[in-house]
Length: 310
Image 1 (cartoon, rainbow, N blue to C red):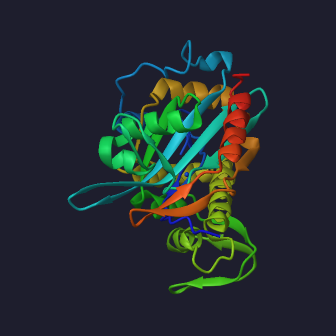
Image 2: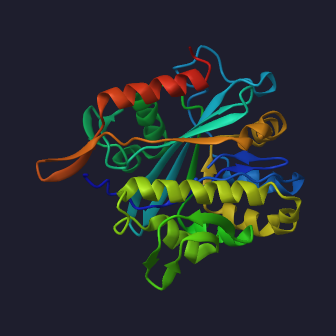
C-alpha cells in the first residue's frame, strides 16, 4: 500500500460554557465544556473572515434552530521564516438532531485543485499559498459541501492542552516504541509528550497513515471525555492559557455560546470516515495521494446527508 506521508499534528475540539471551538491532529480535535471565564480567550482566538457564509448555502447556519454545520480543523506546522503547512486537515459535520458528529481526515498529500491558484497540487499546500481562507475554499471545493467554520491550531498547543486536561485515556491495539516512549497494548493514560509520540507514529504501523488516524481519533475522544467531566473545571485556566496563542477561528464568542447550548449532545457520538482506497503516485518526481473517485463520491454524499442537504 502506498504511504500517505503526513506529519501528525493534531487537533482540538474546544467547547465552552461559553465556547465551542471544534478543533483535532490530527489535530487533533476535542471538546471542553466551560464557563464564562473563557470570554477573553474567545475574543483572543477570534479571527474574522471576509465572507459572511459559504457560497454553497442559500442561508447562513442558525444555531438556535439547530441547523447542522461543519468545521475544518487545520493542524499547522509553523516554521521560522516560513508560513508553514497544514499537516492535519480534519472536517467535522455536526448534526444535533441525530446527536452525532462525523469526522473525516484528508491525507495531506491529496492531489487536488487549489482554489484561487488555477492549478492542482497537494491539498495541504493551499495553506502556504493563501492561509486559512484558501485552505477553507479548497477543502470546500474538494468535498463539495459548505465549510462553515475553520479552526487553525498551532502544533505547539497539543502537548499543553493534553497536560492541561490531566492526560487522556486510550486503548492501544499495537505494541510499539517511539524515541524514549514505549506503548504496550491495552489501556493507557497519556500526557503531552507521550500523546504526541502516540499519534505521530506511522512507520512501524502495518496500516500506515490509517492506523495513525485511528490513534488520533482515540486522543480526540479522550479529550472529549475528560473535558466533559466536572473535575476538569479546575484545569480550565491552564487550558485557556494553552489555547490563547495557538488557536485561531472565525467562530465568534456568541456563536460558541449557541453551539454549547444547542449542540453539546452531538459530542456523544463521533464517527470516523476513512479514505482507504486511494493510492500513491509520483508525478515529476513528487509523491501524491490520488483519491479513489468512487470512494470520494461516497464520502461527499455521506457528509451532505449528515448536513441535511439531501
